[in-house]
Amino acid sequence: MGQLDNLTQSELPAILRRLDKLERATPTNNSAIGRDGLLVYNGGVITIENGGLNVTGTATITGTLQADGTIAFTGTLTQSGPSTFTGNTTVAGNLNVNGPMKTTGTLSVEGVTTLKNDLNVTTGKVKAGGMTMDPSVASGALVFSNGAQVFTDATSIQVYKGTSVVQVENGTARVQGDGSHWLKVDANGVTIGGLPTTTQPANLHQDPATGRVYRSTAA
Image (cartoon, rainbow, N blue to C red; front, side, top):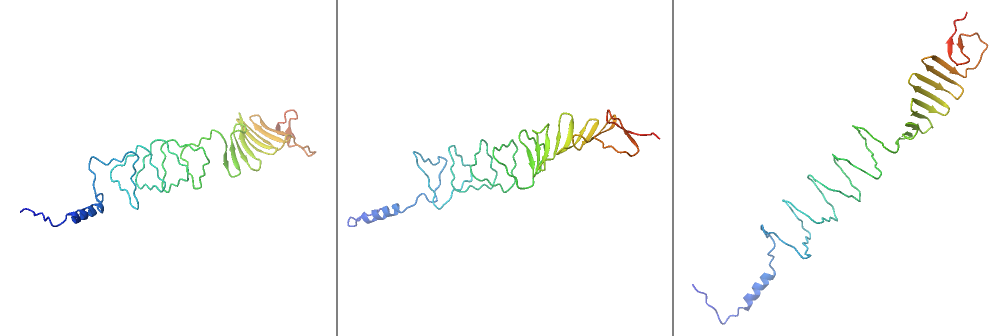
């Protein structure tokens, strides 16, 4: 059946209604983009206001990703290449580092630390409260805040405080109270330096030349 054109009725109101409907239309709502994709070029920007962006596939960024707010990851994050963090970084879970890790600033560990391998200190000192392990003293020393030291040289290990020294080396042990009073034990026996004298009868004899002590069997 054909349509009759009423020549007495204007088409302008119908055209205006169609233009108004076209102006108010939102053709991009609930729209879909096929395999040809969507191209934004020549400085164009996609702005999302009070909405969100959901990616269930892969998001590939070959330029720069700038985030001025909060980035939250709930899955696995794989990072290859250098990473620079200029603010505070908080790790609430386990942090596993399978390769070398370097820090050039101060490292503060406030929890319990478990070390299951070697600790190599190539320069500097190891401090624990008032106790310091100092490799620059002799061949290495344990230095206490009261001035006492436990250190080693080429042949011996020594405990030192003020003028008193206990020295142990291969086959010899020596105790020294000061420069003139000392006791040495070695393969030759016991040698004492700086013994005081007495008029009591002898039960020990000391060789005045060598300082060696003997048990006297004289009647």
